[in-house]
Image (cartoon, rainbow, N blue to C red):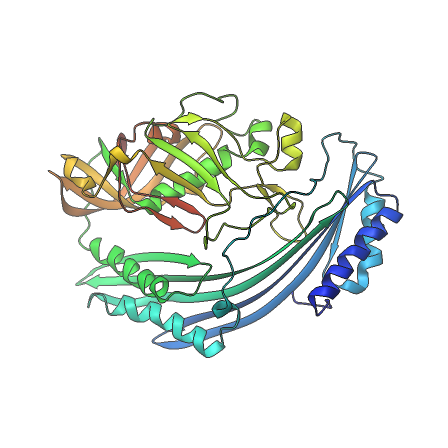
Length: 452
């Protein structure tokens, strides 16, 4: 949403939030929370080494969440002039919702200082943003003469400010910056053409991000030229880090206490059981410097932290917000996530990533593969069922024989169960990378069913 009317200075914003809180308490709320978020975004799309589209936007919004007689009330707006209406709507809504004894707000907790703001991003001019976006396309086209087309190359630069105040002692704020790069290219060789895609992001401005995305996308497209179909086979499989990260995103759903409590997770009721390979750990850490998922506190004001959800293959924890934690009689893990100021808090990861026992990490991961497939792209991972774990996804990749890549593979399908996929992991590459807020190295697993 575009700004309608908003406070112009930090002191005014804080004063506005306090007035909302006080108004809610006077209106009869037992507990109240004010959440304010503003953002500024500059995005550039380039084509043919010229800026094709530039968009500059600013958003501001706030919400009021109240608890009255164990009933929830919620309201929001983008206009500070509607504060009285927001208060009355939230309090009135609490008269009609169902009573829920698990409703609660967090108290004060110490927040750490995190390195997640870059002045160079927040002050970037439109011309400077264009130059960064042009780097993406230039790097892709300069990587290989067979890169003939760039479908889309874009960069975005944003600044976000968050303030949360509640009646139980939370008074917290932070500012964060983000820059992202994305590109889709087409490689051609005679009548054969293949596409390649990549994206990356950081809290800080770094030319390596933009150039790296261009080169990676070009490499992915070129290496698939001349791809062949293969017969159905059950074989060893190396998941590229990007593919492993996509499947780890499904684990994020299964590790959500919200889904566990609703019976929508394959990991429900499996605490302290071995669920994946013993060489794997799955960690969520909202405190990593400069990472996209890092922030000093979650969207309820609870301090973020590092926690092992799976340690040496054994399920040791879930992700919680205040509501789901109270249901299970535990503390919030600082994983409350709001889709926006107009949404109630759900549960989600901060920086979720895989670590592997050091004795099973190799530079030459392919060398131990006699016959197998290196999967560089998987289509439809989002369709994996988090309740059953079953999946069937389209894949592209490279066939490996005697530890050497022999030829590219196209139009194949990988199927199985996500827990089995991670249960049979034997080794990992030394190529760990974050993809957004999900991080993974390449993983050697299998045997896996591959069909044509």
